[in-house]
Image (cartoon, rainbow, N blue to C red; front, side, top):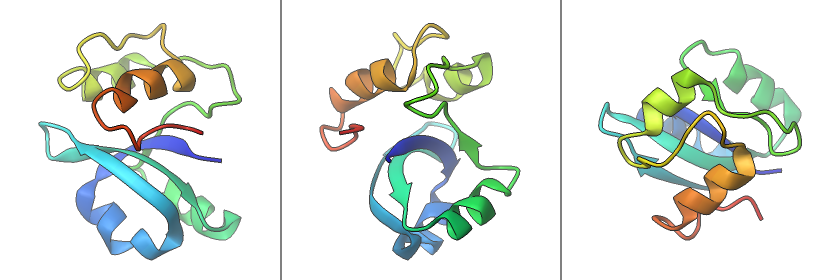
Length: 103
């Protein structure tokens, strides 16, 4: 299932072959908001083990964004808040980049 990450663009570009259809928006701090799905669980474990990769709440978790998530993406999505979950974030971000959706 697709989910959102915040990472350096080089992290994604260096491993793009390990993902199914990834799309991103550049963030002002040089990082990216990435919407993608890993090709296998082994790579996903290695990807998430990197301390500089932020996984946003999984779409099925029902969890909302943290203050740290909001701080990273508020410059491109001013109306994002800690009340947003993955689905509401998807709706907001797809207004900027239509291919960044969870469906």
